[in-house]
Length: 344
Image 1: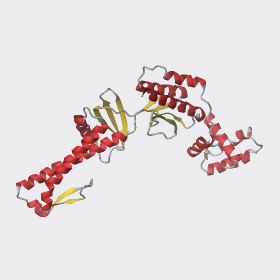
Image 2: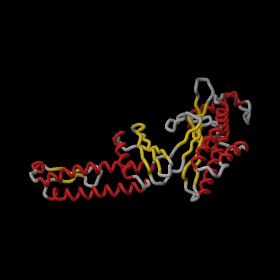
Image 3: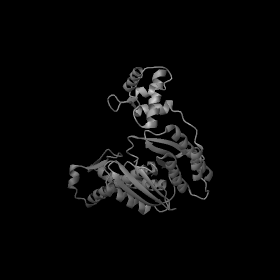
Image 4: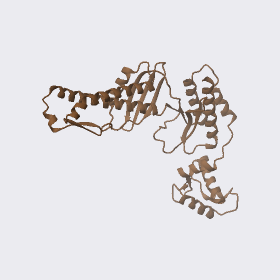
């Protein structure tokens, strides 16, 4: 874009963010930096519309920025102001009491952000690593599931993940029941190692039982060692009269079922560890997975080792006052990171 089109674009976006209504060419001519006609500005706006940066809600109406246009404005033309003194005081008060635990402070951070910005606050908390007391899987849809983790120290955490294809609410309950039976005293990482040992033991037992059947030509492996592996009993294997061989086949079938269940449980654990941390929404009905028409301003925070462990942000309509919201979110994230670093 040249200087004229850049100024037209900037003024349209700023006018829309301020008023929430389409911006017309005549309103731009009144305080434009150079003397140009409304027709000239209309031509520039049409060019910007052709580029996908502006849109016209109605014929002969003014223009509004598209999502692409807002992205370009925020990345390249946004002028971020200084943090307002009153906003700073409201956020600082959140961190006033040293006797508050981290969870309490983060709850108050969410409330403060929501109050200061009049938007929905978003807080992604650090994941907790302590012995597990109870695990519960909840199916939300075919592509979303929630795991509720209750830790031995009383901490409760929710994580969202995408379940493996084909899993049902009953299979999730079965996985949770198995994990709860062995969870005591173990962290999530410990549970993963326990399941890995169980899988290795079942694999070894299956190999041992199947070795003679394969060697004698009664059966053969298909895709051995892969997720789709199976032991195929040959035609003459179906005529087995040896009771011991029949017993081995039945035992192998049972072990295979057990092996598959434990593989599924191991996958659940992996997804739980990778799952998205707790999200706290305050002051709005915005939902995490349906943010069309909304904007999210988010900033990560770090621990004492400079590792990103969470984030805070604000969700609101695309017509956010980005210049004001950005410094508020950044300042809050810095305070949360400092608090966690000091306490560690």
